Length: 310
Image 1: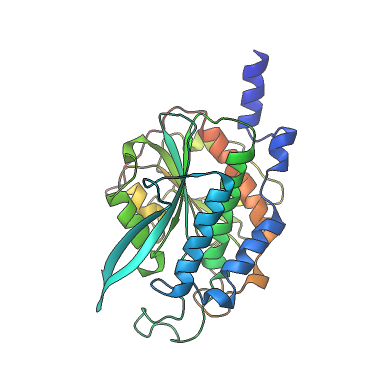
Image 2: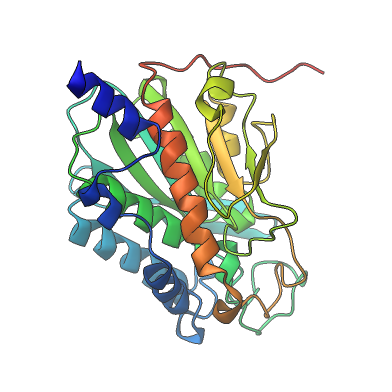
């Protein structure tokens, strides 16, 4: 009885001293974003050198954390796609697997690409200028790595496996997640849910963090019930579809959550730079995410809710 009570308390969002030490940290978040959104990576544009550098950075971080390659012996899932007059554009996803010997798996994802120097966007953005994409989406990649770190190092063997995916080609039409859901490394019907983080670094306390996908699983209202995180306000949106990578999982039958802190004046501009990141607030958002993930793990399976026909 005592053991069951302890597990319930932990799942509800209260952490042991060991788990507390592994919680998301604002300093690490800022350091990750500082690198990914530096001029050195030139905006991580798909098919540009900076994007390859960013994907290598994520793969090395996965390996250092102890995550296993999920695509055979490789952390990478290479693919090409066409966009308008541009053909066979190369990109790749980065996959790291935490094997807990469970029957089902939780996917946590974020896209690592951004606009780069805008050469593939047909003049929509200023070509040749570096678009660093600190919020969009170096912030999400930092969140991905912090959650990976937490679930590797929290001292517990969770009842689900975790698949961490950094997607390529998102800015050019959700290409990485489209490719992955068409070519999954493990069956999609064995996925518990998918959590996507896209732009979680510019927290506005008046707005709060939006969490989409609330209508994608019948159990989400119970999972979210009375969940609170000090200093972080949130609101939910029922839609499972949307303009980020969770969309492709939802339309393929996987329940989703989508974390985002909303638009701002620097969106898709060269001014989306690392010093503007709200790293402490992002750490709080990730702690909120941990609470929700842990509560979702109390259910052996989530009941997927199909898109409305309206």
